[in-house]
Amino acid sequence: MLLDINPLVLPDPGLIIWSTLAFLILIFLLGKFAWKPIMKAIGEREQGIAEAIASAEKVKAEMAQLKNENEALLAKAREERAVLIKEAKETSDKMVAEARAKAKSEYDRILADAQSAIEQQKNAAITDVKNQVGNLVIEVAEKVLRKELSNRAAQEGYIKELADGVKLN
Amino acid sequence: MKRVLVILNFFPKFQKANTVFHTPTHIFAPNFRTGMALRCMKYLLAAAFSLSMVFFSNSSFSQDQHENGEQQAPHEAPAEGEGEFNVTETILEHIKDSHSWHLWGHTSLPLPVILHTDKGFEAFSSAKLMNEHHEPVAYQGNYLYKVVEGKIKIVDEAGTVNEEESKKLLDISITKNVASMFLTVILLLLIFISVANAYKKRGVTSAPKGFQSFIEPIILFVRDEIAKPYLGHKYAKYMPFLLTVFFFIWINNLLGLIPIFPGGSNVSGNIAFTMTLAVFTFIIVNVNGKKDYWKHIFWMPGLPTAMKIFLMPIELLGVFIKPVSLMIRLFANITAGHILVMSLICLIFIFKAVAASAMAVPFAVFINAIELLVAFLQAFIFTMLSALYIGMAIEEHHEHELA
Image (cartoon, each protein chain N blue to C red):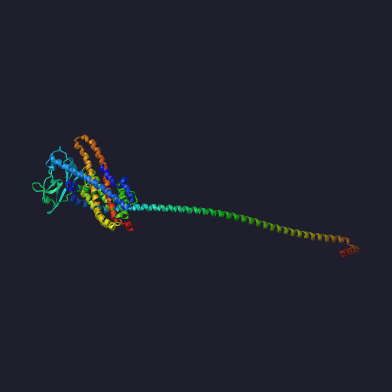
């Protein structure tokens, strides 16, 4: 009834056939030559973007890690430097102290040596002086004696005197 | 304007404004919710369609009365006098398919007529079915053919239609709609193969350029707003179908809005065209339907047996109603748009005053602008609902088994 009234809602078989054909041709050709490459390209691009973002994130994380590592390294280096400086200072102090001690002992030794040498020389000199004085005294005494004891009586008197002296000793 | 409101109700994003329909759906599971929305849509659609049918039948009925009252031979009206202007006939002539493509004034582009009868195929120019005054005349092929009310019929010598013989006639002519559809096919192939080549040439790493950058967002829109939400992870398989349907409808809609020669035909407002597309959706839905889909039709889980038996015919009917609703929605929307624009333009002729154009033309331009939106919207809705139906058929859900 409705279809009799209105020819608009009566599908025309010719148009059905042609639109089926047109649609099949379209879906085949577009599917093969358009949608497939387009969807593939879009998919690849999106994947590429996603990968780029992921790798950027990764690089960022790596950078952050690297920074942390650098800071840790720096802190460690600073600490080591402080330790090194401290150690160096200690070593140098020690060396200075040692050198001072060594110098002092050397000085003491040299002083002692010098003193002993001086003493020795002094003793030697004194001995020498004593010997010379002795010799001189003997010579003088000899000369005096020779002069005084040139006669016999003097000689005997002197011997006597000496013998007295011996006795006293 | 009422029609535009109805369209807006079909569009899910606009449904937020429609609280009456929207609020109760929160209670239901998502699956059921889409079902509810669909049912709402169906009711609205049925209401809109029956209204439009009433409008159509009334107007053509009154037209018949009018014609019968004033003139004895209604389909010879255009030839009778230049002064008589028949609005309904003018509009329907535009809406209907034709064997020649009207260019301007009395000039038409003849199109090939291809007929199949029990004597085989034959082809001739549609110019042979017209005389120089654009009146239909009989042409002697295998039979004697004549155009009667826009359709080719077999007639006898006296010019009366032989209904028995005419039933054997299969008219597969390249009509105005077919030619326009081929134009769309060529346009689509040119556009998309060149865009595909742009991707090949430019590589995937560089940004899209030129026409490619216009098309790509639309393709992404179809993929991200239609295919992915309704089809889930299996969307890639159905992308070629959805994209083809979307662009085929859209370009046809847009060509229909061009009032001069390469456009102006009413392809997507022709029920044969929308029926073909709806049948494709129907086939894809039912060929790809999973066990759950058939189970929900014939033996709805989680219901008493009596209810299952009761629901079976309803659900089975739903299988056919879905593509029918697709068919009628697109047909009615596009046809209504064409009728609206034509009616506004015809106001000038009804009032028989140039001054009427001061009102009619701005209105027609306004409606045309809305039709541009409707062209996109209807392509989107057809594609979205196709995706939704396919998604419902391929969905494998387990919540009923758990319940």
